[in-house]
Amino acid sequence: MLVDPLRIPSDVWSDSVVCEALRSRNIGALFRRIGQLTGASQTRIGAGVGLEQGYVSRVVAGRRISTIEVLERVAAGLGMPDESRMALGLAPTRRPCQHDMAGTAEQRQGDAAADRCWRDDLHAAVRLWEGDVNRRDLIRQTSFASTSYLLPALRWFTAPSGPPLNASGRRIVGQPDIATVREMSKTFRQLDNRYGGGHARGAVARYLHEEVTPLLTDGRYDTATGRSLLSATAELTQLAGWQAYDVAQHGVAQRYLTLALDLARAADDAGLGAEILAAMSHQATYLGQAATGIDLARAAGQTAKRAGLAVLLAEAHVMEAHAHATARDEKACAAALHQAEQTLDKADRSGNPQWLGYFDEAYLSAKFAHCFLALGRALPAERFASRSLKMDERYVRGKAFNLSLLASVQVRRGEPERACAIGTEALTLTGQLRSARAVRYVRDLQSQLAPYRNRAAVRQFSTRVNAVLGSRR
Image (tube, rainbow, N blue to C red):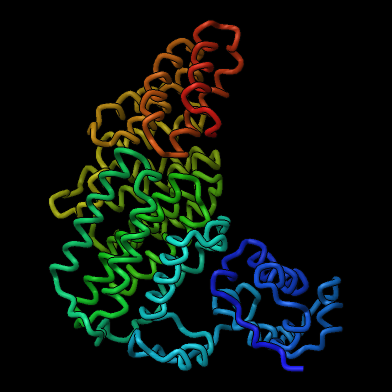
């Protein structure tokens, strides 16, 4: 009996259960999950990896596979990409990068897993955008894993230079095309700051899929233009990741940010790479993964030094400080905050890219306040949280964050009525936003006020929160 070839969609390798099975070398769990995601039977899996169905059945039932020879057979039979091979403890495989995006299907399917080059990054990005627009469950159900940031960060520092960034497609790509992508990024970023990540996240994914994909896959451009195109694409991809983070789609955000970093590396854009690493640190710390947040912030700092952007270096120090505060390491936090202040004092802002416009005194003050609040130091937290409200009014979501922050500080100081008054301002803005982070900060405030529930102001505030936010958590 002939068995159809086993083909594993690329999205399977980012599935959280698959990733955990690889890390623990639990091949039975891997086979079981692949069967669930693809519908492949044990017979079909066995045929694909060169193992008898009975043996596959015993592995699924709990028999462990530990020999490298069998693991290599499984990896090869499943067409496992390099990142998954490495998670399993196997060495990556190598192949030359195709010289044109329009290589034949036979070439693409016949090649083994490879050293990543910029064309691999483009193919991965195009698949992600398409799957996101089409709301594929394998993408939308991806979960966050802090360790999944470590390999992309390592690749940022160690990957060798790839082939030239040029392509010979049918459509001539020039600077006007790239300027349009950057202008759209600017517009989408303004919408994100004003209305929250959920307002335009779908529009950004569609723009990447419908407008940027043809430039990448069917474009004709020289190396200089290709570098600019990849840089502009990385910037917009980073924004898509930030929006997904803001609406609590953390696994999706991680995939976007990882691809954005790969594209920035291919474009040799160190400044943008530092910003993306800082965003990764921000997300990891927000999710309580302080150690990963520290590592990524330090990587951002090293990259910012290479880029020669002092403001970015100050941002990296602030991200590191916040992660230290989350880990309750007051000494390390204070040292990082001091470095941030010193660096920012010496910074020349005249050459900053437009996407760094948000990093100002108000943003820095908010970060200081977050650090002091996490360390239980309410007085300095109050001082900096108050300063953070002297901000650009265009950053509506940021103002909602900072109001919630100041309200939380008031709770810590034993001032529940004042916390409710400030929290009501935050709630008014949050009700206008599509931001899970803004909602979480208000809900956290509501929980922090619970010990004062017998006070009229607290009861009124809690009732108002439930009326405005409904089931949003």
